[in-house]
Length: 100
Image 1 (cartoon, rainbow, N blue to C red):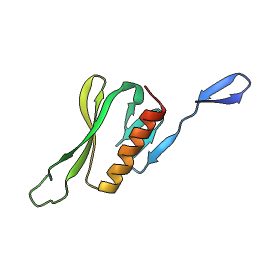
Image 2 (cartoon, one colour):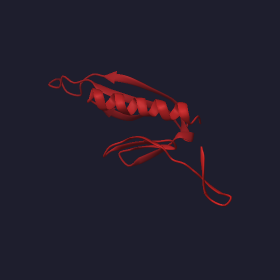
Image 3 (cartoon, rainbow, N blue to C red):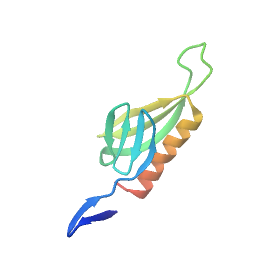
């Protein structure tokens, strides 16, 4: 999508699909803990569950993985199920609306 700024000058509109203090999902990139992943650098994106990090912890981690610049990489691990769902759905929406 393009937006006219002034006669003949166009800029790409950037849409934000999710934002909190450590994660931002936009129509151009993912920003996770300060690292920026351009959508154009991402291949497949998927999620998985991991076992608790310590034997005393009962909460499973939920992870978001992607092929980034040709290599498999974990982008994010969270234990909050609701937050995970919001972030993962935002990534799905941006990839559906803004194909790479």
